[in-house]
Structure formats: C-alpha cells, structure tokens
Amino acid sequence: MRDDLDRYRFAERLLAQRDALGALRILEPLLEEYGDHYGVRMLTARAYYHSAQLGRAREALGALIETDPADHYARFLLGRTLERSGRLGEARTHLRMAAAMSPEPDYVDSVARVERKLGLISR
Image (tube, rainbow, N blue to C red):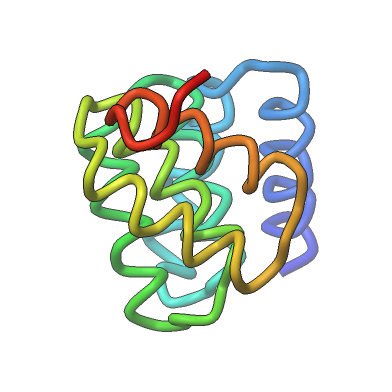
C-alpha cells in the first residue's frame, strides 16, 4: 500500500511538472488495483485532459460526475474538455454548473469565454 501511495504522489508531481504522459504511465497499474478510488480516477482524468486525450478525459470525467454530481472541479474540467473538443453548448452547461456551485474566477471566466464563442454575449 505504501508503494502505491508513493506512486500516486509521484504521478501528481509529474502532472504538476506538465508530464501528463509520464503520470499516466504511473497511474495505469494503480487504476487496475484502485479503479474505484475517486482520487485515482480524478488524477487520471486530469492527466488525460492535459495530454489532449479528450475522448478519454470526457469519459473519465463523465463517470466521476455520475459518482459525485456536486464535484464542481470535475464539472469544470469536463466543461473545458468539451470546449477544447468544440462542443461549446455542452461545455457551457457544465461550466455554468461549476460556476454556480463555486464561483471561482477560472470558472466564471470560462463561462464568459464559451458564451462569447457561442455569440451569446459581446466582447
């Protein structure tokens, strides 16, 4: 168990250093063992997002939101994933929910950016 925790923390550090693919390599065996652990799943979803594996990120984040619909960060990251995928209407829904749950500046700014892209607000 201690080795697994060290691996998880190492994957966190790799992601913080912008090595998302390295983090995913470390997380792969952890997912097999701890695939039901929310933290492992979230870290993996973040690594997918940061490595531009948007389909996998979307799938992983959707599953996290099914588990915890009130996770504002998962909704924000899903919104950003959908935005990067060009699915602006869907992105807006999740970004607005995230901003309503927790009005973080990044969340609010993302809503405004997507709404500008959709032509719903002017610059």
